[in-house]
Image 1 (cartoon, rainbow, N blue to C red):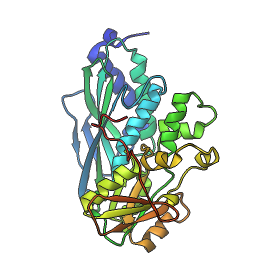
Image 2: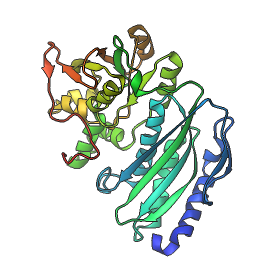
Image 3: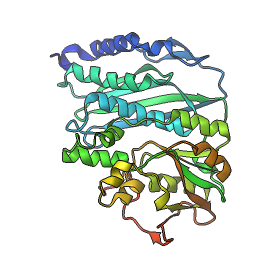
Image 4: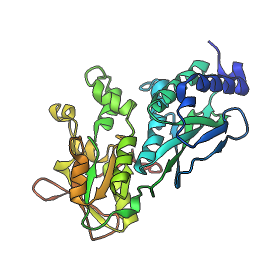
Length: 333
């Protein structure tokens, strides 16, 4: 089996380029976006569409921090990297267009690793009009993969700073499943709880729901990547409001409830990486949007200290949690 050091940088670039060209992605660029030069040159060249707004995001997965080879196949790493970036685009209500990928790789890795990584990326992208148009490759003792996605919208995108006092707060689906899936992977009970494991390894970005929210008149949203409490605190801070959450209203997988999961509420409120959307809006509109979905109204936007989050139990008492979510620079685990 060939190692990366055997094929070299340009050999690997050609392998990646061929893989992309053999995929169907080259035929699904959005209307008006014309790719003139993709993988293989110093930079990509394209003619943008006539969309009124462009959005741009980036995310990185680092081995040992965001994933482990003990629990992730390389296809799953590729899928999750793509899904995390697409989720940011979904949180803006935009359509994904193109992606750049940077690989930080150890030279003793098998070439098949990159092949499998791109299998996962391309599989995730297969549902969306997103084209890989270039990137970079660097030598690194610690494997990392960075993706940057460009998106577009004809309407001013959703944002964090538009929550209004009197709005209700809602989420688009179950929370806590990804954190439960990670715990299961670490405990080697994968076969028993495969559906929760799948949520962790292969989350589904809410692109369609993001578009629906934007087109329906919702203005404020965020994707739940770092944990519900942490992410809603960001909304409250940016919008200058306080947010109250009713813990019993947060939707949870029946699998978690049936298992009597220990401390499951902390898992649900601070676990993160479910990549559902949290959003605010007028109650009547929000209820209509969530009809026949797994989403739910979970709280209200209040006048108060910007960024402060109050979690209420079913009997109305305030609940406190030591952990609110993931902080990339925190020393706490």
